[in-house]
Image 1 (tube, rainbow, N blue to C red):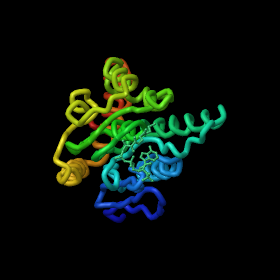
Image 2 (image 1 turned 90 degrees about the vertical axis):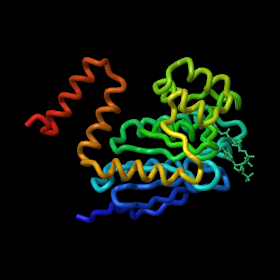
Image 3 (image 1 turned 90 degrees about the horizontal axis):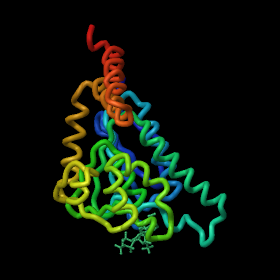
Image 4 (image 1 turned 45 degrees about the horizontal axis):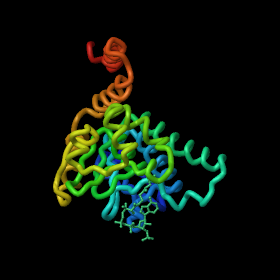
Length: 247
Ligand code: COA
């Protein structure tokens, strides 16, 4: 078995590279601030799924090329007056993307610099850890643009609660990294030139642990977040027993 994970597919809108057991995904439309076109979300979705199924991959890192992490949904994908069917198709597409994000079992770290707006903000906070440069800007402009914040509201409410989510989703003011840290949307703030070094150090620490222990613990955290504490404790017991922890 090779010790380095491999990904051989090539993509138009993202780049994928491996460093040992760490797989890096970089959104690669810097001249459009990595706006999430349908192609980009399809390619990222396929690449994440492939990595999640690859036993050589212990940790995934998502970053953006250029001065932004991701400026949200690609506004040029939306026509002047889309039909109801087109609107439904677009909403279903983004919901399916976030549904997939919450089923991934491999730990994911987001490295955020510059803008992380709308779907871009959601992509970041859907990762298990978020490290942000001190120039990061987070926000949800959907309502301000006359669109319901459809796909992005559920993950945000789940993560930071109704009050803070309402403020972000309905007041539509962008916030800086410090406020995002206070809201519990991110884990750490670093200088921009330390962003990838810090993320890589964290990823290497995780990749240095037993991969099954890491994978099962991520799975437990993911699943127990939406359970009552008694049910979550039972799940913890089941996962521990299934891993032969109490042999
Ligand atoms: N969709 C499509 N293109 C986008 C985009 C998006 N969400 N966000 C930025 N871009 C493009 C711009 O159109 C511009 O392209 P161009 O050079 O071909 O004209 C390029 O990225 C750079 O953006 P620009 O607006 O010049 O940068 P800025 O620093 O002045 O402003 C933002 C940055 C993020 C404030 C501004 O680009 C913006 O408001 N973007 C839209 C954010 C948004 O509403 N996202 C959708 C949420 S549903």
